[in-house]
Image (tube, rainbow, N blue to C red):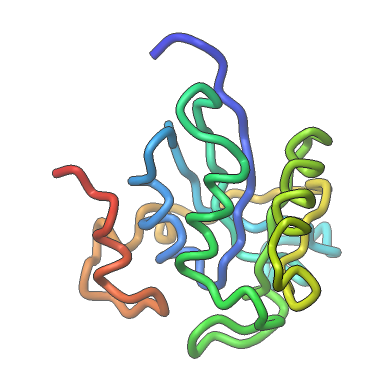
Length: 162
């Protein structure tokens, strides 16, 4: 592929399912499981304050921040704070993080355009730090499709071409 890709960090609860879902979306070039915006510099333990997320490289000619947000909203409860499915805690919060102020503005406008905007718990913030997850967490549901996930299987399969 030629052309410029852009990058977002999408948090939607447990990163296994989010990565499996996002990697098949139209316009997504690559994904990587990781953690964003933590308060601890030591990531060898509990990833203090980090949100589980998926580093998402996308082709802006094929998709947009708004379309990616619409897809994210398919798999999350946007009104839930620090909880998705059975997973609870700060690391399971929902969010969109970026190093690009244009992405953040587009995300905020996208939320503001919704009639339920005042109820949305998804945070939209600049990316302050990011840590790639270990190999065990990369493409987890591709390698282990029977592992449990908060996202219904029919949604995980929705955008698969093959």
